[in-house]
Image 1 (cartoon, chains in turn blue, cyan):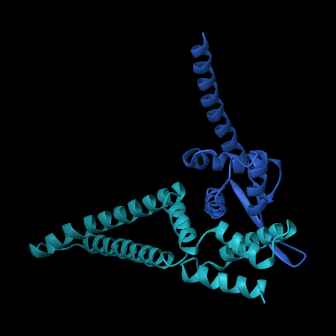
Image 2 (cartoon, chains in turn cyan, purple):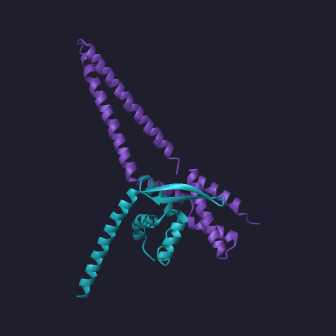
Image 3 (cartoon, each protein chain N blue to C red):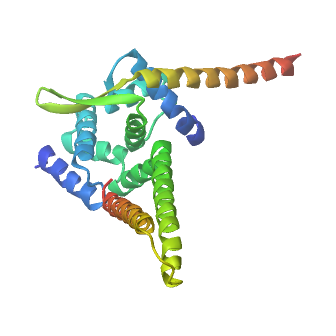
Length: 109
Length: 149
């Protein structure tokens, strides 16, 4: 299981990455992250919503209510600024990854 | 006999009592709760068990309320907005008082006041009144928001 700090740090980029594929809602986002990580990343369900609302306030994502079979659901979609923020996140995570990889290689030399 | 709708109604009341008072937010959390209950029932759980487990996964209202409060406090846009608001009010009060005080000093020294001096004093008073009104409005809004999740 992945540590709490790394989960918290990766929540925003993961949400943006997921919404870059297409709009989605809270429960589906949690389920997809759980499936893709092989259940190694499990978000506390209630933790997701404050992050979604914060991203919405920052203007990175947008939200709309939809009614399906008498059930209301709030769908989120990424905005242009969200895509820019996602690119920045990806650069930062790639940098961390490449530094770790280069240090790891040196250990084997 | 377990009734899902009345259990959800009771869960909503518990959320509100814990401080999550925004109805739209509770609607969104209810939608999540119902999705999770459906998913668990499709895997064979009974309605009561599915509801209890889904509500437990979502967490108690007090924790959710705290998470939203923390998200608000850490919102960089909100912090910047508050800082800009504070600086604008401080500048208004400083300019206003800066215009009024020299005229009051002249009046106390019994120096003759020209029409332009009175005008400057009035402009200063208007600016100070504007600053005080903005500060009061900001304070009232902040107090109202404390009660909303």
